[in-house]
Image (tube, rainbow, N blue to C red):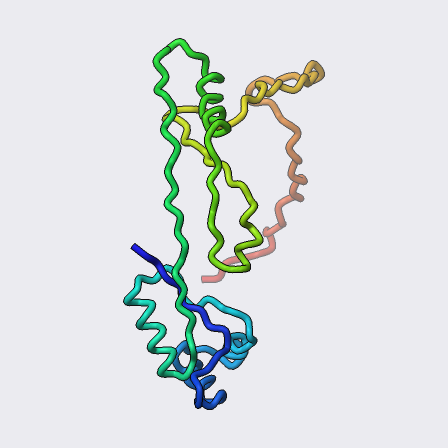
Length: 189
């Protein structure tokens, strides 16, 4: 199935007024004046990507009715063939480090994938080689082995435990003063 993208480079339909086209696109895309000015900057801007032929034609016709000339371009999608899965491990006595190293070795031996650029911007990345990484088997440890953490050596010989129920140094409450003298008070009937 072919995929297409819709782009716009600021071109208007012959005979269309530029200000009217800007207003139409602002209503169509529900965009503010700043975004519409960006559309008319002269650069090629992708509006929508990964469309089928019918969807691309619908976008092109709608933009043409608004007065803008849309660029419909087929996307060059390369079919990528996945590397074959690694051979199953038959020896159960194999060390865990060897099991973890197997996917890495398989990934290094695999061929690289080349991507065909879709426009001049992506052409700058055409010489980039992307390795085709494999998938590790279920249960493989993907993290590098780290040494066991050593417990710190702390000298606790100066500390001791107090017996149960002993005072641990809580602050004592200040002694309250003598009770007030109420002998001069009488109850009346």
